[in-house]
Length: 394
Ligand SMILES: *Cc1c(COP(=O)(O)O)cnc(C)c1O
Image 1 (cartoon, rainbow, N blue to C red):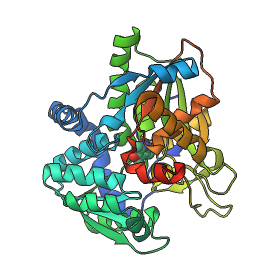
Image 2: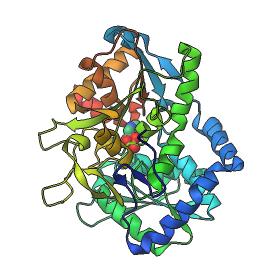
Image 3: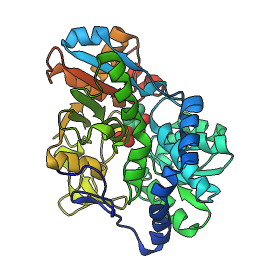
Image 4: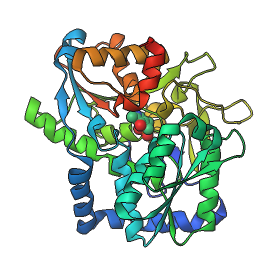
């Protein structure tokens, strides 16, 4: 049977691995040799799950969306990651990684952030643990995302502007990598999605897998069976999707649906539909599918939702796409915004625009009346209010 988990070298099929500069090798190697051992320690598991319960607010509900289900004539459940502390699933991973860093004896954390959501989730757990935190962020993103910059500062983090190149996420990533090379002993680099060199994609997927672990026991209670017919999630880098899919990857009866941002249309030149448009290449230390020009320059992605605005996709998802295990659907800005407003009116839940992409599949993708479809509601819409206001003239 085909494997959908990372092998020892961090490969998912042909994707993954660790394509890193020589000088980064000791850092990644230290993590690679220790992460599984540390995660298996009972004291680690105990502390991780205690914090997920008392600090994050887990388990998040699995909510049967009755009015939404009626509209689309199928059974739709929402996994409410929007109710996590800080408003999205990202904190599951940053909690895991801060505990990992502590056990590795690190007393300084660095991270990169684009829209600021991962920076906030990182600054949050550093405040929780009293650990120094430096977040690299493109100068342009700092100007665009003032509320998240303020949040990070309030939480005690230092936000360092990346002033080179396009002054956005990839430049912030370069700065973070440079910092890590210069501080190999005392610093841990918290990556925010299932991207980056091995072992990050596997480690982040394992931390986020608490999502599908909970879905199984919650569905058993509500439907008398652990497995849904379909599980649906939006994909930026792919961490909320990896967590929602994780415990169903090896169960072929469970359909896996990954939803990407088509922006203004897949072929509009303003899109982030990585699987549809991507070619094999290396980004962020990992071999995967990414949007690039014919001569291999990474293309600027576009999506109305900042969290899906990433030119690559984690190696697990590249493998799910290429192997055919996953069904990939791309959703435009307009379709996502409409589906988001629909959820507000039908269920009284204002979703993050990222999550609205996953909700938008029901208009065209039909399911059977008795299908059980779990949609991972990755985050809440508070952070997107200005976007909703501008789009709908509210
Ligand atoms: C960051 C973010 C995403 C995209 O990141 P993944 O790693 O693909 O999950 C999706 N939804 C929300 C609410 C986010 O904040």
